[in-house]
Structure formats: structure tokens, C-alpha cells
Image (tube, rainbow, N blue to C red; front, top):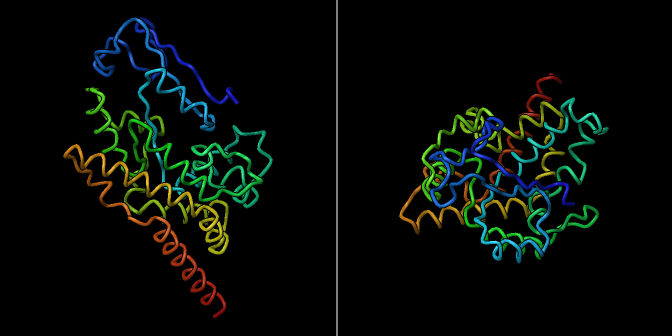
Length: 265
């Protein structure tokens, strides 16, 4: 649905909402400065027509990927807020709803949004191909480095990540320190609440999304290496995020068993 996308026009003379880019500021690349800047924010699935539209429009493209567990935790938490009064599902019903947690980002890239149809290797291959077509790919778990390299590549000079963090676009420090998989799993376990078996099933359901995420992280790493750059944040991320998630949920299961044993004693 086109209602899930927006076409923006920002005028330099208008104060605009906090976070808008003034057209006469150093944040805007020189070749794009002027009285009006227009850009498209796309939140609709990437159907085939989009991939013929963007090149012909001469548009610079970017996207940001996120660890599937972090994405699921964020989506479930957001839909649980009072503002989503229309959402009748809560707790486990929300966590296990296909349209909420079933390979959402992969489906967006592949254009497969029929949630009654499982994702396949074909969807994964299509999503990986489309991810490679973006001119720039950032990684939420390496937010500071991603923003710094984006600013460098696009000629922006104002790149304070804390500015974006105020709008909720950065991963919390506690998340970065603990590790995204462990943080998301523990948060879901406590907030939903959900046990380790439910979370393990959720991980397996999203196995292809973990592979897409790893492909995206490696794509960004390789592009940086080709440019003679290195991201310490990216280098610290697990090479196999699915295996890492499985390890973390197994630790959670062991903790549950220990707690159960202690309670029985």
C-alpha cells in the first residue's frame, strides 16, 4: 500500500520539525543544496517495480538492517504501547503473530508479504540481491560507525549520533554492552513473558532472517574494506548470528531449569 510511504518536501526557509535537514546547512551535500529538497521514505514492501524505478530516478539509496531478535523485541514492545489502541493482541499472542514476528524485514525486501505463506530460499536470495542494490547499508548494532561512514560517503559534516539517539534511532548503551541477542531475549522473556522454548521456536522461525542479516553485515564490512576502512563495531559482531542466538537461548533455558530446580528444593 502506498499509504505506508511518504514523499517529503523540506524548505530551507521553514523551521520544520526537529531533525529535519536545512537545505543551506553543511548537513546537506553541496550538489543537493537549494530552496527545496525532496526525498522518499519507503515503508512499503519492495515489490519488483521499485527496482526499475529507483535507478531511472537517479536516486541515492540507503537502508539500515537490524539483528532479527532486536527487530522483534522492538516491534513487540512498540505494538504493546497504549498508543496502539487498535492492537487487540498482547503478550504471547502478539509475540507469535505471523504479521508481527515472522521474518518481517526479509519479507519487506523480498516482496513476500503473504503471511500465510512461509518464506523460502528463493525469498532469501531475492532479498540478498535487493540489499546489495542499495547504495549504502547501515547496521543498527554498529550505529555510531554506520553514521560516521555515511556522513563521510555522502559529504555530511554534522554527524553527532546522540542527536539521533534522542529520537530513538540508536541502540541503547546497555544493549550494545550486553549483546543484542542476549538483551532482546531477556527482555522478551521478562516483558511478554515468554519461556526459552517459545523463544527458541521464534529463532528457528526466523532462521532465514538471521542469514539475511549476516549477509548484510558482511556486505557492509566488505564495502568498507574495499574503501580502506574498518569498523570496530562491525568486527565485534558474531559472524553467525543464528548460532549465537541459539547459544543465548540455550543459556536462558539452563537458567530456567536451575531456577525451577531451586524452587522445587
